[in-house]
Amino acid sequence: MKDYHINIFYSEEDHGYIADIPDLKACSAFGETPGQALTEVLAAKESWLASAKSNGKPIPLPEYKPVIYQRA
Image 1 (cartoon, helix red, strand yellow):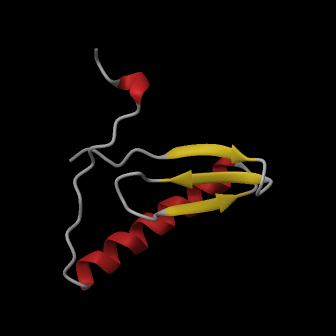
Image 2 (cartoon, helix red, strand yellow):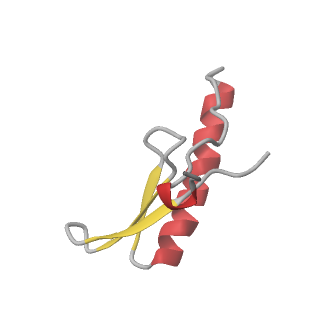
Image 3 (tube, one colour):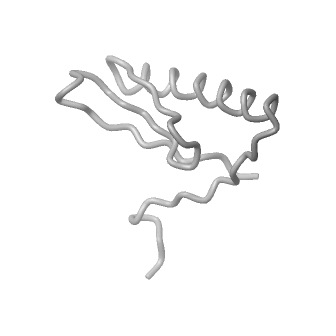
């Protein structure tokens, strides 16, 4: 199985970096650097998946693909 896509971007409003996983609803994290945001969102992903599994919720397959990687 391929892994989930992670977006990382700078937020002027938050004065830091936001990382999110589009395939996992509301799975995001904050960091002062891109690396910190990535570390935090990877931990959030593990918690998200563990919570879904323990609560019998469906775990979506990785499907999100940014436009720059899509073929015309």
